[in-house]
Amino acid sequence: MMKRVTKAVLPVAGFGTRVLPATKTVPKEMLTIVDRPALQYVVDEAIEAGIEHFVFVTARGKSAIVDYFDSAYELEDTLLRKGKKDIYDRLKAKQPVEGTMSFVRQQQARGLGHAVWCARDIIGDEPFAVLLPDVLIQSEQSCLAQMMDVYNQVGGNIIAVDPVPEDKVSSYGVIKPKSGEDFRSEKIIAMDGMVEKPPVAEAPSNLKITGRYILQPELMGLLKDQAAGAGGEIQLTDAMARLMETQDFHAFAYEGQDYDCGSKLGYFEAVMAYARTHADIGEGARALIRQSAELA
Image (tube, rainbow, N blue to C red):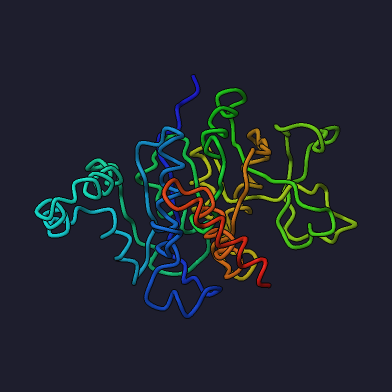
């Protein structure tokens, strides 16, 4: 019987070097997108998908993440005493249920694969999701919820992908469909490989890997002895390639728009996108963006 996916790993140990100096004192995952940290959007995406327990893989200097998800008694008391019940209620609505979040340390920066492996004892023998928190995905149904629907259909391992212009494939990691798979028209594509930043003429597809995964627990055993790969780090994709030899992998072309908040322009793009659709300030934000475009 196929096990439900109820746990998610969020690797949040990185330095955020692409958006320095902002991340010298503020974790990149805590950079504000309109009115909340980027990380909150990722957590909300996972909650919509049915995730019940979050494992944050942190590092030194990331205590702001732990504090953010904790109760803030002084702030809450002040809001209530000043009659700001609406703000209090919004704040409490985002506070997680006690015991649903775990924090483990990646004590050395040894790569994404190593960060995921650090969550092994909490994941145990259950399938799990991995969400890269510097990627935000704006969609009607959350990306991970869409992936859960696919997982319930086909099982195995699921990788979120997004088509990019074919002349841009050399900037991304892309999936290699199984022979005969029509990756241009299908949403769910059986795959047998991944290629990192291939030359345009040699790219097996134009489907870039987007930072959302549903993976089987056997991956943890492979990560335990995974040799260092690109950059001298333990790469998640290397372990997935080994698991692909014995288990099914499917790529899923989700509905939505992704934003790379780990880059300065990607972060700026995300702020504009979420401001445009914000319930309180959307109309004003759209007017400001139009005004800015006219001035340019």
